[in-house]
Length: 517
Image (cartoon, rainbow, N blue to C red; front, side):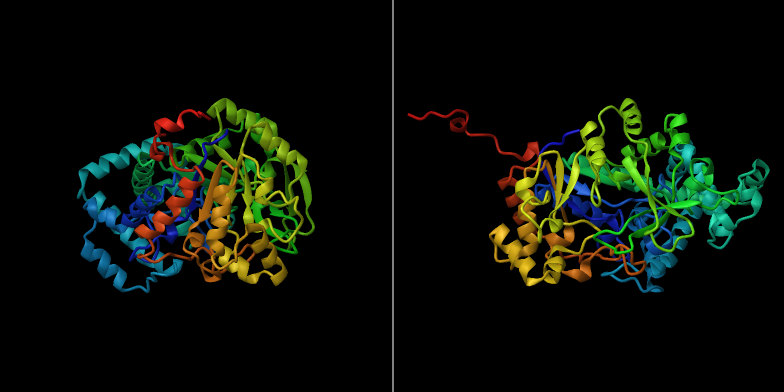
């Protein structure tokens, strides 16, 4: 579907300021929404919101349906009467909670016991209205919540080990083993359900607050799910697994801009033919859940729906893979029958072939343009602004790119001169130069990473693909949101006709017609 001309900012909630070691869904999230509104923005793009595992990557979650408990705001739990503020401060004092970077280990050691304490308070009847709402939540979300909560409880009972190492009865989900586990771990299961309750009790009101201010949330759905996830454990027949439950082939991409040996993601691959036999029911359920959490969904690695890179599971790099045909139009036709128009952005970056463009265009899905990929080549580069088309989203960069300032600093002088010459700018404010270029593009939507808005260099980078450590940790300082910054963004947004309709000025009477006399 085509979207209205608009613009927004890319920022994951973990990057928000807070005194608790990680950005969360509390006061700073609402302040950020207010900042977006003051800046005339109508889009807030986030990364996947699920519970993260090893490496802290939001693209390797324990569930495609669940939310990340680390995003739960202690401040809001205090407001619900399940904790006191003094308890939170005392708990935080025993941990090194950095205001500039997320130390995930410290955050987990601080926050998870605190969340457990709030669960115990609920069980004690401290806030009866919370207990009633929790019961409703469990019933409404049982379709995914029960398997997820059992998976997480069993994972904790096994010291965090992958489900492939559990006892054969649990690995194979034999009914007697599952029934025994539900009985033995009943309290741990309910705790996991309660953590999800807290997340959605905080996220959905935040989304509503943004929507009331004419701001839509763009979410992110990785095409593949993590092997060590409730999704794979609960649905092994939908993936290429051997008799021991281990992947036989895994996902990746061939050598590209980011890596000479490709990227070996390691995610198990779908049995698309089997999924199609029940009308892609798992995917329909996944997207139905996603569209309650966000307004627009970015489908990561869209090209995998046309064809994906299959790598034998015993390979150490992604070089020795092969292209395998994906589900194609049949998949999106099914989604269209279920959801009607599809509020989906196709992440079509990387090695793209004509069949990918044809699939995207058949369902009228906007693609992505990244301005950092535009320079250093020929004038026919599709990412150069004079080659843009309307049904796209223009980005200065993404979470996988360096910040624009860091990118520019790493270019050769010849490449920098190309950028300066094309933009007609001296490059002294390159982050905002690229923001201006994205804003003036004919692309329907423009998205700017908040690091570029703040004119930050490489240390503020969110992720380096192929590097397992040091990613996903950046946070912005609490004094970054100010009226002057919002005003500058608002100026460009209005100049290039991207303000929300509710904020656009009414035309003067003299503007309604042209009289040459």
